[in-house]
Image (cartoon, rainbow, N blue to C red; front, side, top):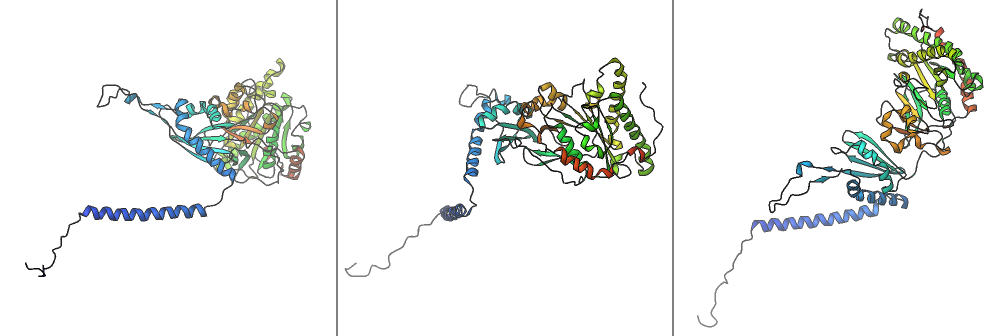
Length: 463
């Protein structure tokens, strides 16, 4: 070709791009956009989230620290499952036997009032009993004054770590004279600050234990102040601490009580016989007027009220001081047993109050049929077992033996029929003048329930 001659168009070469490169490029672009959006959103949330106090931030850091240590603490406390099915494993590259797999229960931690709350999944061999035994060690490891363990639902435990005790402060209350709502008797507040209500419907009986000065009588005043404003409630008191009930702790409430007795076993026997005869007459009255033998099918009414019987220092009427009183005390035990066993279906609720609910103070036939038990401070674990049952041994961190002291006056351990485990409750303090004011205000509601229904011809125990 001569110089200056045209060489023609330059040939172009098109290199084909694989499809996966295009897809990867688009994915990278989309990921980059998503990353930028995410970073922007996090920055926006950081600048616009609610401000928290330094105390709350410190609490969150502490809970995060506790959560980070849980795998280590669970393994060192023996709260693990050694999987025996993996004991003889061998790797494919060697003949050495591998150790068995060790699993620790998974847990989720949350900040809570006065501490933290943790939900722990159970494992075979690691359940409520095993974790409860280690509650004291967990409290030391977490820096808590107490760790409570309870069964939240099958396969899940709830651990409550408390940095300070919310029940240590007294709680004075002045009754306002309002009657019960839905027949729920207010007991107090628990560690969570929730109100503890006791359903009276179909309740057979209540036992209250505790050494002197722990709050038993104040709790009875608080209950009577809730019951007194209701015309469908009648109250009887047997006070085994004094000879004349007008001089005792319930003297200011006498105007709202249709029957009262002191520490004389014979006088108490007459009152108990009167109550038993009224209770027996209820069956025929209920069938004739309501068409049923169950009192709580229709509930209390003015003509068929709920009868609440408070037996304070019940051992006074069950323990014979002399040989001549033995027959009377046996009769008292018979009447008290009948009230506890048969009173639920006939509208009778009996509350047994004593310092130590051992078999010599309150017969086991009475104690075992009462659905609700409360124990204020007691000296020994045997006293706690007598009041709350043998299961309290599994919860030493919440046992009433820890409630001895002036700061614990009014705090009780409660076993409720509708909740598993045990619960600490701060009961309110009600002064005698305030209780007397409520009793006098509603004294006009007091009537003898035995005069409201015709009595049947019944026979008492053979004497």
